[in-house]
Image 1: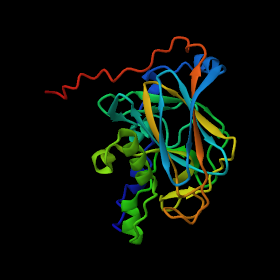
Image 2: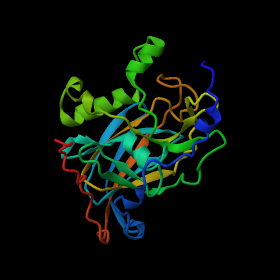
Image 3: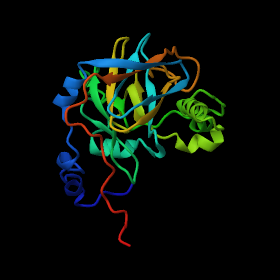
Image 4: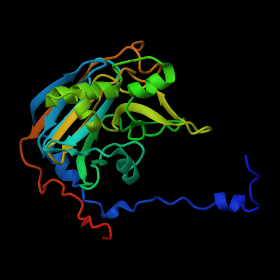
Length: 280
């Protein structure tokens, strides 16, 4: 390590500033959303098998819930604009605009150039968790999905039920195409129900057993027509092993709901108004 300069303390003592002033982001009318979600009609249900993934569709203006149904289990969520798979969930911008872990009122943003909310979190039964003594929180947008490439680099093993592979199979089946043609559409995830953070000493990404229990759920409003894919992670509750068959795993349930009355004043979200000239 290099010798610190004489003014090291002053340099390290500069104040921390939140990077983005979010007051001018599109308004979320949570009272109107809350009123609409009081009267919902279920239109679809998908059971995601352990160590596997399934797709689901949600029309704009409808709600969907991810439910814990049998045991403590985390899920890896991908979202796309159902009419344009090139517009997809952008975890990096979501965490910059909101936080490393998201909950009620936060929004899942889409990729550039559209850069708009794809979904808004409307209810979260785990919002009580907050931050624990290790700095951990629930529903992170910092970790990527577990994948067979990293697993092979670390262990030398070919394991085919990492969340990346699960999502690839689900999307390939939905589109009726070989995995090699669609793998590039699978992207960094929202880690639903997963409890994670960075260690306080070495700042390494950690996971710990999820607090989720049967009956817990997180609910979203689709701001555009959505195609979703959810993987029931092979890590189970992510409290022990990962990317193997050693941990107990449980199914997850996705429910889609139509509001009986339209959301007052809701019109969906529009793509970013930037002119895309990039100075040329």
